[in-house]
Image 1: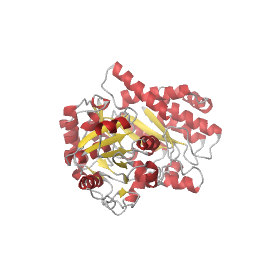
Image 2: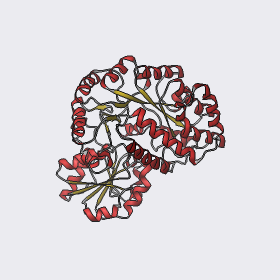
Image 3: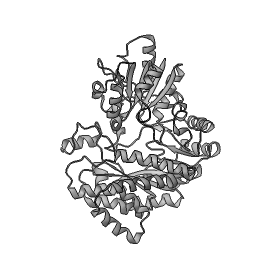
Length: 473
């Protein structure tokens, strides 16, 4: 059969979920094709390829665009949608126009669906699959080394990502923490009682996947996109450090929590080649971190600054995520994130506005307190906040912090208070959005991911990233 995989866009993080599902189709002997909606006309691709199955991967921010595109080719082939949106919003199946949703992890379910279609059998009873006739419970979680080897060629061989020097990899699934805003917390409830939630690929599997990509495509920097790359030094990490350093030998970025940033942990990561670390602080207010976001960390701001400086002392650059417009936050909470990053020598401070995705604890909190239109499907994490209860002044400060807060990296300490006063009073403008995107592209490209590209290529990346940001802003 011919399988057409559809994604809304491909930026600078290649969609690994599509590669994994394409690996399933490859192992079953099917032809695989890719359509990127913002670059190709879906109707033309369907007419040219004449697929038997159209498989969409989508998040909630892409849902409207994907649904609209699908409406034009509905009925031309069996259609199935998977990803975070079908998982969190399964009730939107009818609106989507698709024949089925895959809820949760999709490798085994997709394999069963393809076999059923090829044999002319119904799919209504397949675990993880929702149809208009029946909604099935997810199956037990699988051992990750049993997941088919990803078909990275589908995306890397058919997009700009093949020549882009940074590639993304996963070493695990699941997160042990229960932050109220996170998709993981909602997904974890779906799989309650169905197996071990936090799982790792073997070091051997991870190394082989990186080697496979490295042998075929440009690769000078590795981004590990795990929710939590490592919690503490253990046998897996020790084996990884030795083998990665010897067999891959490329700088990398990974995500860890600051409470895990001990000298022992950082020494191991640095030895392996860690160039930068991504982490989340979310709020400069400890009460909000603990009672609203449930970050299950007892670190106060002094502890956080110490951990940030510890990362720097090991020669590793730091990327920190913050969230604006959290319920009960006041203007000083937003502005103090800038002070916190400056005190911790953070290289890039990344901000998003709080978006309560359905099924998360923060969504329930906002619903209970009438702070959010719970029927809305989020369109972007960097648009103005939709959370109610803030004044016009607070909304302006939230927006200015989101767009310009990262400039604290360039501001001398002696001018920090003046910079914060500017964030309080500056009118929000289109210029701020452009400034946000340009600084983000430069700092991430040079200080966080260290892309090995020419000046012209860097300029192309900046223009592409700016266009994407402005579309979302």
